[in-house]
Image (tube, rainbow, N blue to C red):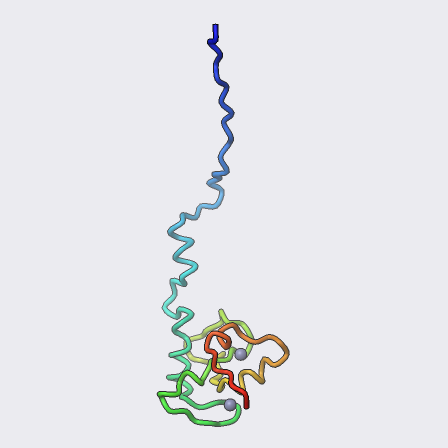
Amino acid sequence: MGNRQRIRFRKIQPKKPEHGKSVDEIVRELRGASPSSVSDYREQSLRIHGLICAKCGREFEPKDRNLITVHHKDGNHRNNPSDGSNWENLCIYCHDDEHSRGLLGDYLQDNRGRRTR
Ligand SMILES: [Zn+2]
Ligand SMILES: [Zn+2]
């Protein structure tokens, strides 16, 4: 009597193989497969331009290298040519100044190098 058939609602799973990208590929993209990965450009820029602020000309000791930040001249943080042409080494104070209109880069806050003058 109670031989009811259960009706299963099969939801169509949102699995569209539209984009031919595998997860692996996407992860690789996010990490930046190119040799000039994001964390690397700073070191490169410091090597190319030295530990000198391009604005105030202040020179820093290697131990104070955390006071030097890399500014992107065109404002595009993804534009990292290996010859350093888009980079400018600025001390945190001048960099702060450069972005004083509220466009402060995230990394400045990360560095927590801001002190009251
Ligand atoms: Zn400076
Ligand atoms: Zn900047």
